[in-house]
Image: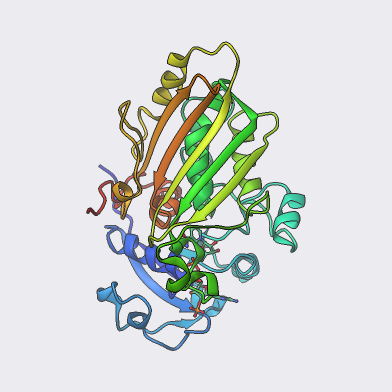
Length: 358
Ligand SMILES: NC(=O)c1ccc[n+]([C@@H]2O[C@H](COP(=O)([O-])OP(=O)(O)OC[C@H]3O[C@@H](n4cnc5c(N)ncnc54)[C@H](OP(=O)(O)O)[C@@H]3O)[C@@H](O)[C@H]2O)c1
């Protein structure tokens, strides 16, 4: 049993995909009370015009995203384009607001300011505790240290959705010293909601339906330094990863296929054992039985990551496949999982383990 602890939460960016999903998971949380909802160009319009699936809040009018409107809550969730949350978080702190701030954007994820400047081209806003409770640290096969870093924190940097998928797939092998982190290759199938709901030509149905399109090819994707940071956290000295996402015609979901060269002489049985041990007690990250493969469809709506690992002996590589719902385990569900830890609530409270199918 836990002590009841109702918390109020404001959401900046409630008209977007990430903000909408944050609201959906919070509405199912027994302790959350929904406070201010803010937007940018859509301020002044009802939430129901943008999130018609959130019937219980359809009449709520979106306020402007300002610290005046966000202040005075127990928790503030920032679901804004990257580069926008650093200033708002700093303003909230400078006016003495003591809310827990959860950033769904990228602004506070990277430790290295040079990596931020290289991939995002602006000034680094700083580094917050990283909201991936399952992240491994050197020598560990459990993520106790990461959970300890999130307990009682007032700031949470929620990971990028692709980063969560690739990190969960590869980190057991890195932590166990079974794969070579200098020769990683990841190719992902991504649903379109990962791009947000802004209007861009390549996101039109006429471009998307019946087609698969790669994007950010050739080492340019902004999630690359974050994946490298996570795998260094898991024990890699240096990381080199070729990372290629592809947009496939589905709204949600990520299927990440990530491969790595097996350390020469490694027994294939020890590979499966490493992944099994890492995720044996994880509530939301499940290694599937041998021979079963993750699908995006089986994670939709759930805060679940499904993982499989195989050894391709002829190629000398480990192949991992990870499926998540980019908006749940990849964003809002992962955020709420970390927020539960920060609030001292049970980590799994209010979070969906089961998905929606077919
Ligand atoms: N989509 C995903 O799967 C996903 C996964 C992980 C993390 N994220 C992160 O979550 C954040 C939001 O992404 P999204 O997919 O929800 O994008 P989105 O659908 O485009 O929503 C963006 C939200 O930010 C507001 N906004 C736009 N420009 C703004 C500005 N200059 N200042 C303040 N607010 C502004 C928008 O308000 P109006 O509608 O009123 O213009 C909208 O509410 C991003 O940082 C993204 O990287 C997204």
